[in-house]
Length: 271
Image (spheres, rainbow, N blue to C red):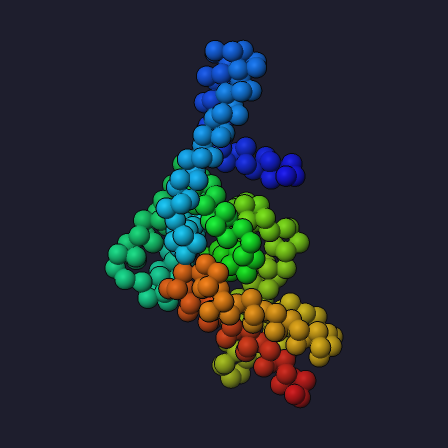
């Protein structure tokens, strides 16, 4: 376990470590402090395991999605109407029932609270999707969309996103690539690839950004990037790996955007 991961685990279980350490210090000095901290860590880890057993990947993903969305909305100190509307739009696109919608609202509200800790939802999610890279990526993309809701990603929002990536063991380089693609998707969508009269050159530049390739990329590289992204965002595959079924529409929209970008590039190249 590297030092960053070790530090993160210590932070996640700090309550158990501190309480156990203090009890140990009072009863056994320095040795007791170390022993108590280890016991406290173990007990809190076990308790987290019990909580984890009551969840499944879909439920953990759902709960983390809206709680973290609230955290990001509050990151700048004030939740804007645009950010609230984005959360509402996600709920509408998921076609949630009344009970699920109320739960999503409760989670979003919880995420906005000053005492909310990301570990509450990220520890179980990270464990349940540890080996599911495409689901991890989809989670980060949804949160980046939330961050983009009121403009570009602020430094406070980026700090939250980076913390999420640390929990999910997503590298900084991977995050950079995801941010670049999401920023291009945002622009591609806003410029309206289906609307006449838009700047073709700008749309084409955005399309290359959506696929994460340079404008001078060869045909084979463009096709490879397209196929990789389509495979990563395939709704059925994502649901099989832990994406809540209600979020199938979000995955479909992703594949539609990727397909539209690829078609734009092929058209520009006369294919």
